[in-house]
Image (cartoon, rainbow, N blue to C red; front, side, top):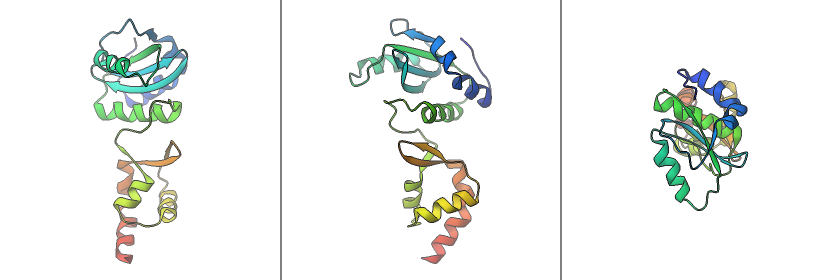
Length: 164
């Protein structure tokens, strides 16, 4: 098992789907590790998660009769929880596993931002995102922003609140 120490190296490791497939293990061979893990139904990635106790987490998935999976893959990491969350979300957006139905924090949908700041114009918000060159993430037909990027829109939010 490979252990990575930086966000960029870890993301690049995860994006190599051959490594993910090569590390897949039968569900009978669960080993304890803090990691990002992948659940497979044959060769299809059906779920991506992170856990500091992979044994307990995968056992919980085994109890969930709505998730069908035959193998798992674990990629250990010594990254901080926030970095693991970022990588987990990036991987979910890339692979779009069928059992991952939402993103973990720190992402917010444009609709949620629109409601929280009472902007009342998704079109104006999208335009401002484009003007500020803010990276957007697409998942389940929704557009998301990283919460750190939302602060880059503070002038826009202030202007919109003064107009009301």
